[in-house]
Amino acid sequence: MERSDSLAALVARILDAIGQAGGWLPFDRYMNLALYAPGLGYYAAAPGVLGRWGADSDFVTAPELSPLFGMTLARQLAAAGRAEGLERVVEFGAGSGKLACDMLAAWSRGDWMPREYAIVEVSAAMRARQQDATATLPPDVRKRVVWWDRLPARFDALVVGNEVLDAMPVQLLVRTRHGWSERGIVATGDTARPFAWSDRPGAAAPRRSMDALPVGAVTETHAAAEAFIATLADHLRRGLALFIDYGFPAHEYDHPQRDSGTLRCHRAHRAHDDPLWEPGASDITAHVEFSGIARVARNAGMEILGYTSQARFLLNAGLLDTLRDALTATGDGGPAPPDRAGLALAAGVQKLVNESEMGELFKVMALGRGVRTALAGFAQGDRAAALDG
Image 1 (cartoon, rainbow, N blue to C red):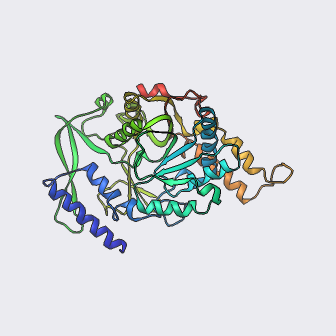
Image 2 (image 1 turned 45 degrees about the vertical axis):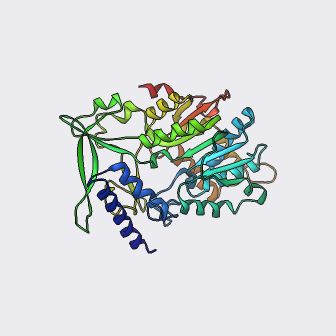
Image 3 (image 1 turned 60 degrees about the vertical axis):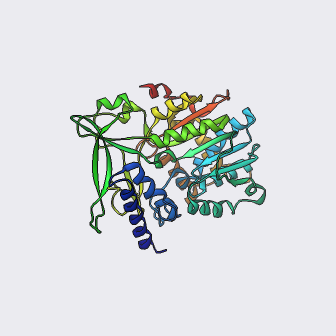
């Protein structure tokens, strides 16, 4: 199906959903269709949506920026796997498959390797891309990679989710003089602009910190992400889960100056703020509200093992040692001479840890059950106390 035909079919699907809902569709349902409608949504129909700068893609994630990201995560997970006797890794939303390949390659050069690397992916198009990527691994490594269509009733594992929570549908709430309204969409009858915003009063505010937002403010709530964490807790018998994403604790998320919310769209490596424009052609995302994730995890019987910035986590976990090892290329163990590849690795490190790049905006949260090993990534600069406001 041509892309223009796919977009038209998705618009028709959303218009049908509006009609079935009585003329008004909550934004989270619209976002779910725009991103995940089978064969039509942004992730379901476009396997090349993420990738390198300058490529035919819309955005770039840390694994595409630098292989050192996956190699450093591999160090942390290997240390935990050895100490806790955990032999399975589960990755949610594996994207292009780059993170999986980088970590498996790093483990193949070390003294720990998971017995199984399971990927949970809702997009058939992205799964196909992941299968192509992992097919390049050596046979003895590739055979460990499997895809789960559903979670086992109970499992033990090291869990990874890189930029997964931000892509889950969110509700939009608007503060008025009379309380909170929920923002949804209606049909306009205009083929050039088929959808428009419409607010319904009577919404509940799930966070006390939302009291700080002024009249007219728009913000997001994260029922889908929180339900995902609760489901994971129901199935994870023993293990730990690392989630890397951009976001804030509640008191920062609802700062009065953040009165326009965090909802953003990405297309051709440019951001825009109109999710109703050509649904299915842009990524739609919102920052993660990590206090809510922590609350749900605790209520489900999991522990908060750490929460810090991506920069602090990677540096604690050995990013600079990983860079040194990657730059050591001569047979006698001496440093390799400066070259384009070495400079690219160093530049990638800057993007991963610089405050003006990914270092501060992105956070790492670790959840666990039944594990006692201290994680090196949180040895310094743990901000878990900030999650409670």
